[in-house]
Length: 341
Ligand code: NAI
Image (tube, rainbow, N blue to C red; front, side, top):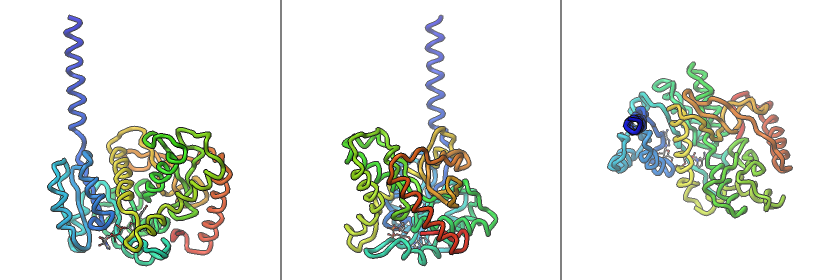
């Protein structure tokens, strides 16, 4: 009788596991700027994500083709393409997660600040529509300069009365992806198990990888190695811009990073415990109003903005102080909320 009971309970457990996997809730994801260099591979990667039940691809041009193409892939998400202002509302209606890679990318010689004027206007328009059509969605901002587009989005949402600081994220995952790759190469460890928190912002000196907290720890790295790794992570975007020689900035690695962060947001929404990623969010970790650090994701977005931990390397303490000094001056000199770059 015992063995009969055991096999019955094993059978039930298997059924429960199966039904919980198949009962992954309906989740609509909208990508704004879906026909672009980042948007297309990001659409592909989100189509491969089994947590997505509906994938809405929006751009000002060329989305019907991208949507038709991606829609033939035999995975769960139903894909629809939307093009132009008239269809933006429908693209957003009912979205749980909106990912925004819309805008112009950097060309050689351009800084992220040069992008500001054009992309600020694009982001403002898109966030106004989000406030109207899916005010409860999580928003993943990829459009640069993230240090500024996130505060702009916050202002738009505040004006519309829909701002929830738990739901607005600047995507800094590419900095983490780069830091992991570069660290694994230098420390000569398999990259798969590597973790490196990256804090601060998402431009040059404001990108602060905490290699002293990297796991697995490495004793093999000198002060010079840490300096070189920090600088390479901070200049990772420029490395790609220069290598592409006028043909845009990071798209494939960014799409990967965007898909990793989007997946983490969906898992959080679905109640999966212990989902932690770095992101640029409203923060009290430093005196700066928005700051990237580790964030615990949950059913309503940000569940906890985690602290910095111990900054044991000199370069980390120095960079953080310099960043606060520079940002602090900027915030004093400009209107609050229209933040830095
Ligand atoms: P892209 O020019 O290839 O694509 C941008 C797309 O946005 C185009 O398809 C364009 O039609 C679309 N677009 C323009 N205005 C729009 C609007 N009002 N509504 C919807 N779509 C609109 O550029 P790419 O390479 O895909 O880069 C996109 C953005 O991502 C840039 O701002 C770039 O700087 C940023 N980026 C951010 C990174 C990050 O780590 N957060 C890394 C790399 C790029």
